[in-house]
Length: 67
Image (cartoon, rainbow, N blue to C red):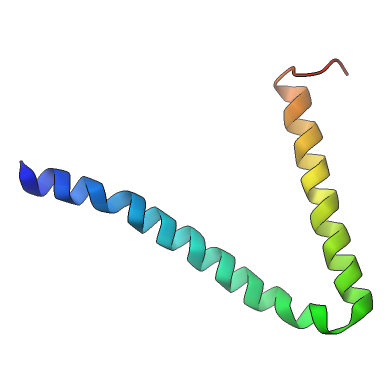
């Protein structure tokens, strides 16, 4: 039974490792775009726009505000 709980305790660490790997790979792909100021502004604008869109969509879906 101890081996079972030892295996179960490894899953959160595995999950965090996978998520960090995805973020690092994504950042390495995006990093060259920050060398040009125009593309850097566009990338930041897309990130902010995506976050705002997600924020308002989830807020409306959860009924936190009246739309």
